[in-house]
Length: 323
Image 1 (spheres, one colour):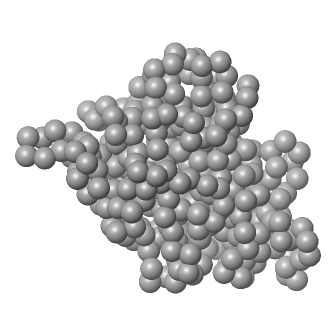
Image 2: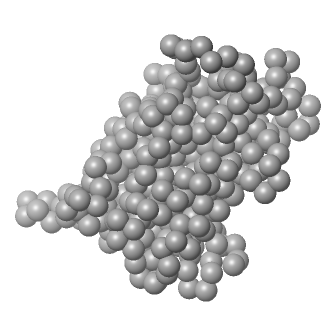
């Protein structure tokens, strides 16, 4: 197994755009020829578009784009811009009078980070899609959908930390498996190899980390207005020949990567979702790919934390280490 850049998995292309001042952005994954895709949603509060298309019972065999964005439900407008750009390029299902591109989307909640009135919109989605096809510009950190990402929010935004978007990919023989993750969790983030907490809920003096799980277990009383601005979203990318049903299973196995790296995860106030896509023809064992997918998810989460920079008054993990 050797590490590769996630952008080496062809023909998928990734474009990003963000409004740094407002603290939001979007990341667009495009495959003009169409990509087979599955989805597994395990959080209780997702903001998504065209999710049902990825149900194996639905007739669509491929989608042309996937969008990860900020803005919560408001940010779902970005997919319209992606569709507009793809239609202009003649990409999509031919329906006689035009071509209809299929674009799925999942969003994080970042409205409390920068300017809540600015959200990813049609224009931002259009620019990110154009970037993907003309000059792919993916990078980890405070970019694209990770621009306004934060973690450790059980006590509200006052004690959370800056996170971002991260990626990791590997090659085993002809098989390539990668992941891009936007880490915006209610809970804490751990190094899955050492078990050490690396980001999350800050102490009251904001100089160190404390445990979200321990904080939550101090009381079992019902909390009616629990903070709901969370969600970790990801795309697992493979160069395999799997169909939708198998990709849904791989997406489900990839959630093991969330579970080993984020605690707590899959809560009622997270919208945790993972897409899995096939953009090639390599034959591989489904369970092996699912196992590897979980591992690249975990490492991509680490990269999101490592490459995040302090912003909007929220410290990054690297800044916290220097206090």
